[in-house]
Image 1 (tube, one colour):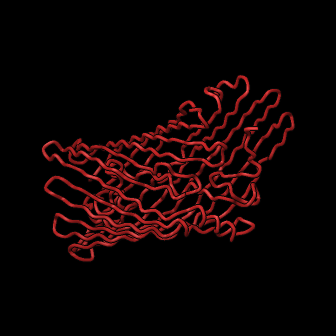
Image 2 (cartoon, one colour):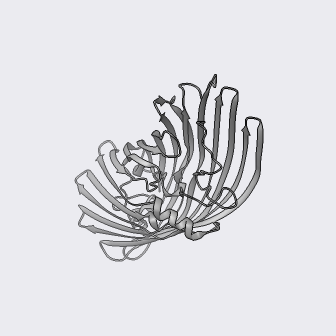
Image 3 (cartoon, one colour):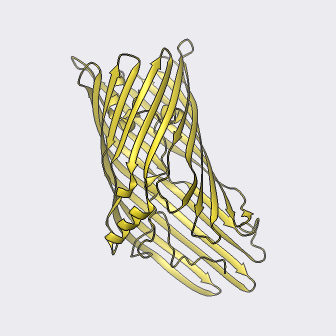
Length: 419
């Protein structure tokens, strides 16, 4: 039979509890990847903001940069994502699957505080920092998934959700050229994962449906520093502290194995893990009206640590060391300002490696970005950005191994009001 036994192989986003599906052979946590840019300016510059940030998004990238905001600032943005999947199973290329979602992306407010010397700024924000929206389709005959006529096999996955950060923090200038800042981030989110399998072979049929809802809660914090060498060179560094996350789950499934029906009624469970330290550095160069920024961020995901929810924490954490890697992400962004028009043009590129190695990565995640901003008047600015993402991986859970290709388009639009 083509059918995979999901009773013995369970590799689901966050579904790795003894209470639900047995201890893990591999551990896949959605929150280790699926990053989404905070702020439309950052989305146009490949996320290179550790040294180049100059708006409320600094509360997420490097809070020390908040001192650059000299006027009260209020900003909000929307994002629209188009997610495409095309999977090759054996010699069969599945029909392209697509999922479209429009979401609130970010909102922040920055309040500069009058002081006798230097600068002091306080800020709060609500940002969507992870996008879990995803789709996957696989079949052993062209068109069988949508029209299951005759013998065949079809498999599908749908993810809907994301992770939000509610942040508060501030920054202060400690010298003419140096600022320091800190923030606290409270994390909250949901992910609804649905999976289906259908197979027909002669008189035999098999059908499987499952639903998993993960509810996330957690907290984190970061400290940052910014240094300006004259007006042409800016340097920044940020440390994000370990992030404890609690995942509460609800799971159910339905299986029809040639008339033998079994049902798992809604089952609750909970587990906890901690994401490791993350270290970032960035620099920005200004030449007249041109800004070029470079960021590097290092995270060792082999240090992800499970704290509770497994019958054997040691086994779960050994699985982490076996299936995760440390990653070095980098961003390159540029912005050119036309002062006579009040127009800024932006572009960037970002390599954001996927840390989970259980799926063999054929092509790591690359993001190409572009955008612009336009001053509608002295107090109101409009920003727009577009992102193009693509990556490829091999899924060893299928025999023959499935090659999955993902393409994503993201569009952002936002408005900023400065008093």
